[in-house]
Image (cartoon, rainbow over all chains, first blue to last red; front, side, top):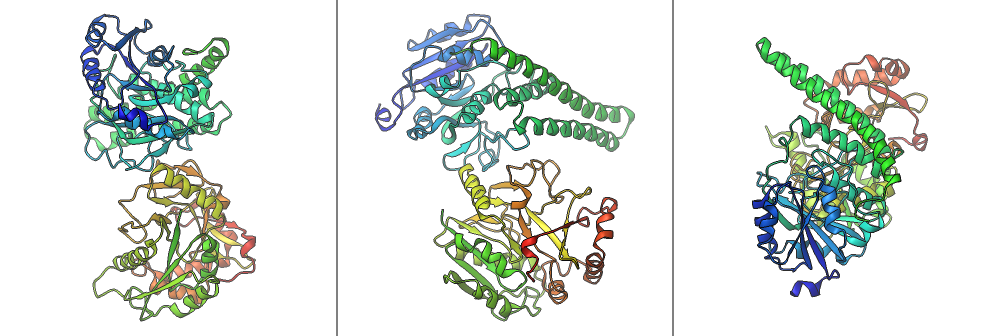
Amino acid sequence: MSGNRRHAVTTAGVVVVTYRRPEYVRTCLQHLAKQTFEPTRITVVDASPDMATREVVSDFPNVEYRRNELGAGTTATSRAIGIADADEDVVAFIDDDAFAEPQWLEMLLKPYADRDVVAVGGRAINGQPGEADEGIGEIGLLLPDGRLTGFFAADPGRVVEVDHMLGANMSVRLDAVRAIGGIRDLYPGTCLREESDIALRLRRAGGRIVYTPYAIVRHVGGTYARGRRFDSRYQYFGARNHVVLLATTLGWRDPHVRRYTRTAMRSVVDDAVGGVRNARKRSGLAAKASGLAGGTRRGAIGLIGTGAGFIAALRAQSRIKQTPRAGE
Amino acid sequence: MRLNAYVLAGDPAWVEQSIASYYEHVSKIVVSYDSSKRSWSGAPLSVDEALQRISAVDPDGKVVLLPGDHVGTTGEHILTVETAQRQRALDAASDGADWVVQLDTDEIVPSMTAFLAQLDAAAARGAQALEYPARMFYARTHDGGFLEHCGRWWTTQTGFPGPVVVAAGTRLTHARQAADAPLYRVDVSPWNRDPAHARGARVHAVVPREQAILHLSWVRTEEQMREKSVVSGYANTKDWTLSLRRWRQRAAHPRRTVALTPLVRSAFDRFRLTRLPEFDRLDP
């Protein structure tokens, strides 16, 4: 591979984490087989209760199959299993429903020529209109109020600095991840924020993270293990896991934690006020009640999720102190 | 990072202090003005005084004069004329630059170090325009203090008339605003402090309020205010007789004005008293 000679990084592995999506895994692996930079190894980590994915992987002789017996809601554990005995310079993570363009890995590795770069995120095209232009200038930021921005489909036309990455398309320098204690799994349910955990800890350790719009995957969005995107469960774990993320990666004394608490409370109030406004706008008692209930429900879920996040963060910190981390 | 600037000459108030605040960090300052020394609406403008003052703060010969025809025709909206003048100046300033500062001549940067650090951050994030907070000053009081626009409970409030730095070659869409340029927005708080923006508007970075731009918009002499009422881009959208009367009253009775702030409905008519020691001995 000519690409291997051009980069400071000479070895790279790819980890695909999956749960009950065998056909997506097949397509994902077919795309990985066409890479212009050949990975040293490709590992599929499967948390499914059945063996369907194992059968698919057996069709790809150079792909390693590993099990995560903890099942759904343990994506970070799957990542940790994927890098457990890896010795490559860099490991790239790709979702099972993300299909890489042929130059994906080659482009993902280029920014590592700068030794300060410890992680590189790539672009995930979702097929939404205008997504290439939306959010340029604010891709992958940890905002001062504690929220995170996404916009990982944006194309700023060059490599830009970010605070975190999209788990569907990201890579890390292995020695940097080991230096911060490996990958840990504190994000149950929808697993929201588990990928940001790695990024924020790397940033806190002084590492530089960049986003390259040239490392492209087509993110088709497979079915969820449970529920739908943006349903109540998604909202609850979003609120819960975000508090865990900030408190355990940045520490309780970091201003982002305090600010996010205020931001979350503002959001609860805004949801409730939005519900009242919705009720006013609608005609008919049932419609008014539905509008009011929608806003109140969103606010309540946010409040409960944030509260649960604080409790979970305290427990998580206790666990972090007591047990060795996954991936160490 | 190569930095140029442009200014519109016609408003002499605070022009020396404004240009001096960033002078050493730019390579070239394009000074745009109307050749007939009139405003966008055709009213006489203090171009000569402004040019004289600008010349006095240009020891290194960075100023490049750019005269042009910037009086609007009948029926043409003033802001359209303003945008065209700014675009011409910006195009000229873009030559040889990566970024162009577009501060008005009554806007002063207290800390260029902080300002440039945020510009670096904006560039690293892929933005093409930097919005930086401005504290808006309304009037000077008899004891040398200032009436500053603020929130209902005298909290710091900021204003964003548009990005104050844009990438060279940016296309302006409305006065200083560039709708197509990705923005990086700095404020003095993690939560938006500009009543003209949506409550939940994202803030990308925070600077201490002492580092916010000082926009001495209405801190002027009576004569300068009279001229502003005629030549301003908002000349036709305000009752200037009423606005000037209120301006005089508020400056004459600052304590009463400040005390009434929590009761005032309009977010743009709330004031607090502020001291700016560095301006104690300066006149607009």
